Amino acid sequence: MSDTRNNFINLCLENSILKFGEYVLKSGRVSPYFFNAGGFDDGHLLSELSKFYASSIVENIPGDFMLYGPAYKGIPLACATALQLSQVYQKNISYAFNRKEEKDHGEGGNLVGAPLSGNVVILDDVITAGTSVNESFEVIQNAGATPSAVVIALDRQEIADNQTLSAVQRVEHELNIPVYSLIKLNDLVNFLSTDQHSSSHIGAVTAYRKKYSIL
Image (tube, rainbow, N blue to C red; front, side):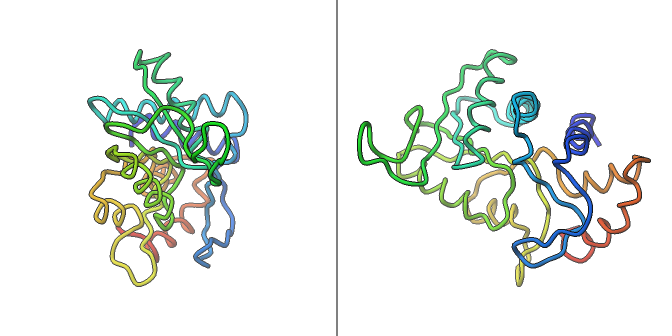
């Protein structure tokens, strides 16, 4: 596993963003681990998180593009990542995000920031059912722009009920758009197999992966 992925997992563990136990998911499944991107809740942690997003973007996405953050968790991601791209990589990238409720005064509408145009990279924390990405895809296309990629923090690599693809694979297949993740469940399993402080959790996480995930 790359040092970057290893460092991101360590950051999440040290700040209780990634936790182990028994957590009931929206799907009803009982997961032995839980990832809460809302835990990146101060300036330092948001700065660290956005460094990983910016690094992934620079590594994977060439050419010209802008950033789009779907409300609500995508909003700080888009803002902070744009800052990192400017300050660290000297890439001055525009960004935009949406409101949940359309504004009927002032400039109006439900979009804030730069006008959506050209290639647009969507930033979010996870893809569970793909609803947020689908909504973002529609907003971007309706503005005359092109959704070009999605970057998320964690790919749980889980197959949905009565499906043969994971949520991420389904988005890639149905929308014909690449999804890049900072870490995947496989990365977490690899990390647990070598980290003495967290190795006690590998049995439960491996069993969960075997039952619900693409291998």
